[in-house]
Image (cartoon, rainbow, N blue to C red; front, side, top):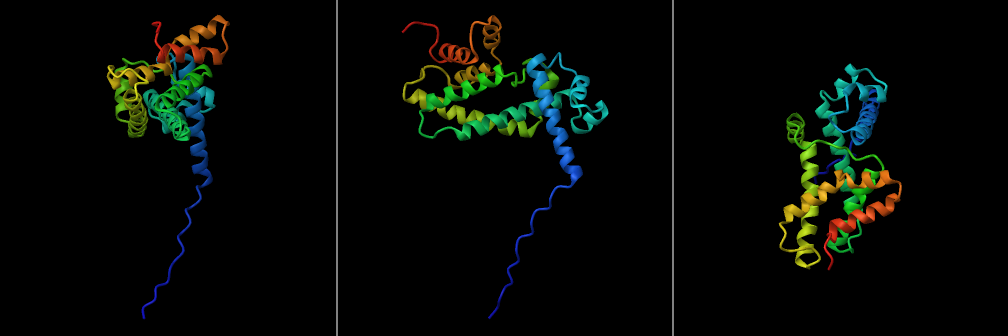
Length: 211
């Protein structure tokens, strides 16, 4: 009779102190980039500002991220990861329309909190960096697939206009993350963040026409 000795799985090696510091520094860099992109936008943000905010030399920063475009891509990956975490935590019993509204509400709240990166849509070097970043592409695809499924389901049950192309609805929802309207309304000092979110949600999902 043959017997086998079952070996216990080898525990994963604990990251070294140096590795932990590397990860912590990258986290600090991404957080700084996120804040600066939300505050100033990609074109106005400089690598020197990022390095100064983190408290490291620019040469050290480049060892983590070789370009300004890579810094922006890392910030976008983080936002998409946060969006996916929010999406996965949504109540499975709410309707597709309610799910879409919840995601847009979350994006508006992040924007009003000053934590939503602002990226230009016509910068060719940034576009190239994003299209070469597999982590960004994978997360963008997953978010798009989840939102797209809700859009199609909401059109099927007539809670969204079925005559509209789903891709047009998807891009309209994505645009709310960089919508200037919340900032304009906040600047008036007349509305709370909660009121601004509800106003933008109403114009986004109900439109401007009377029913």
